Amino acid sequence: MTKILYVEDNEDNIYMLKRRLQKKGFDVVIAENGKIGVEMSSSEKPDLILMDLSLPVMDGWEATNIIKSNEKTASIPIIALSANAMEEHKQRALQAGANDYDTKPVDLVRLLAKMELALKDS
Image (cartoon, rainbow, N blue to C red; front, side, top):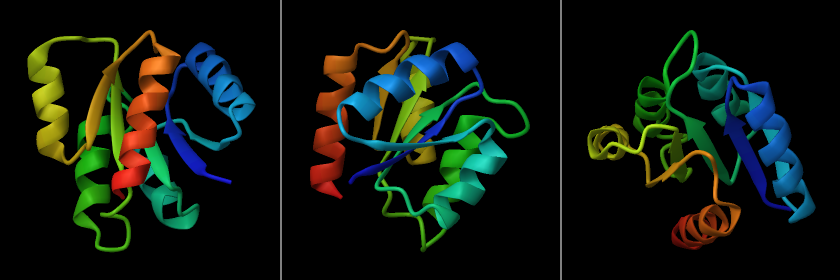
């Protein structure tokens, strides 16, 4: 079963996306801030990370950068998620090391296609 690490602090977003991904057959683990996300990227060994960018303790840009800088976790594909659709947010996420970027609210069909591509490329 494909394991997804979902780094998100909004309980409504967690509830909605986690359930939808589980129904599609994914094993989903949650980190509620960027620091925990970095720790869980090593301990949980996920196949893919969905990374919110606006997080407490450590934001998603910094967490992505740290994960991608660690040789043990660098190969894990990361899809950055943000409610902000500005091009500068997307570019900043990609520069931090994210493999892709998607906007919230999540369009599940679009996100699943991005996840499939990221998993295939990893």
